Image (tube, rainbow, N blue to C red; front, top):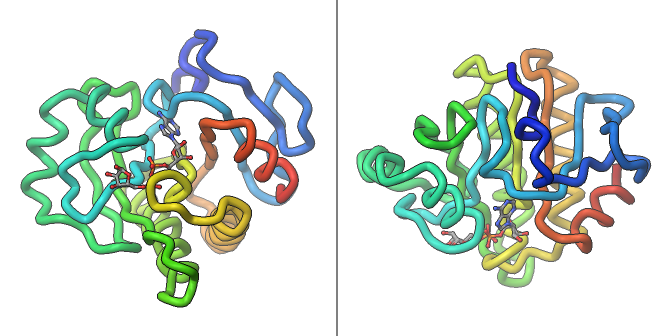
Length: 194
Ligand code: AR6
């Protein structure tokens, strides 16, 4: 498989959990990397999209994925009939370097009393389950719900890491999970929690 960093282009800063720069270093207990950069340029089996319930595109990482994948992605999404918060659906990646896109809908943050933590954990778990069902070995996640949906970053990051670790502890079919962050602020939170 091609290098997950996109063939050496300067699109990424690879960060190991202990904060050391290149080369990336795996998490001690599971195969987790953190990358700061643009998820649409990753050469992995699947990237995860932080979508909305229509699956018909939007802003943020959703918009970036649709722009990079091209109009065929939207055409395939139209046939999926939407997606409820916490669920996940899969499409091909079209013009993306990633073979698949796993679309999930994270919770909109409205104070934390409306099941947001469970919904966010479901988004990660169901995305990983779908990956296993499709024999995906390498998968990259954005910081689901941490943009337009307003989820507090530290809490969302804790859920992302714990849910992923729990999943990988009971299922060895995925080789690598990459958390892709777009800001230094979120990067520092991941580093601290990992
Ligand atoms: N690569 C990696 N991360 C990115 C990229 C990128 N290219 N672009 C943005 N991010 P958001 P949400 C980060 O708003 O909060 C859409 O309109 C971004 O900085 O994309 O789940 C959908 O259609 C942030 O940290 O997703 C929904 O309506 C993180 O990705 C709604 O936004 C998630 O931010 C979903 O909101």
